[in-house]
Amino acid sequence: CILSGTNIGDEVNYQIDDIYITNDAGSAPGNGRLGEIKIYPIAPNSDSAVEFNRSTGSNNYALVDELGHNSDTDYVYSDVDNDEDLYGFSAVGAATGNVVGVHLMAVARKDNTDAKSFCFVAESNASVDVSDDITLTQTYVPHHRYFEVDPDTDTTWTIAGVDAATFGVRVRP
Image 1 (tube, rainbow, N blue to C red):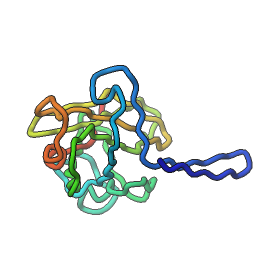
Image 2: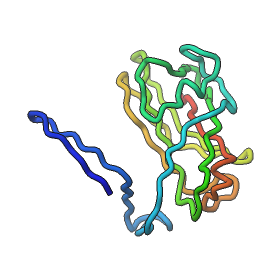
Image 3: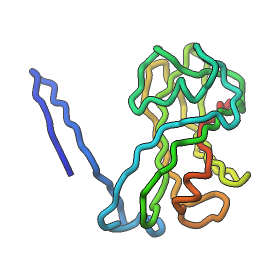
Image 4: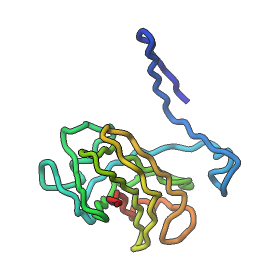
């Protein structure tokens, strides 16, 4: 674990690298020590099924492929209930061992005062798992969802399963 920080006046900023937290609730493997693991950040590299509009360009994935968010530089958007954007991702690559889960992150906001939410989507071989609905605010906020099992097999992910799956978001009422 790497922990670094800076103190500027009353503000303290920290950067933490390679940390995971589990508890004793729920089922394995997320309920105890996982041992040494590696986290592989991967970005979208193709459109799979897109219904969102683009702020620019011709490929939706290219507007959300930054590993950090870029605010309103480029983005996808929709206010149509149940519109969905699913993306293919870069292969995990030469990773070996067990996959303990897939963690998705989206930085999102709404652009009006109407109530609006979204959910994360994991699709594997036509089987779909969705997160609970996440309520949006008018400020960009990072949102996260952890998918412990492959929705196609209902068992722990494999590297091949992660590489073949698509992930994205769906607009919710």
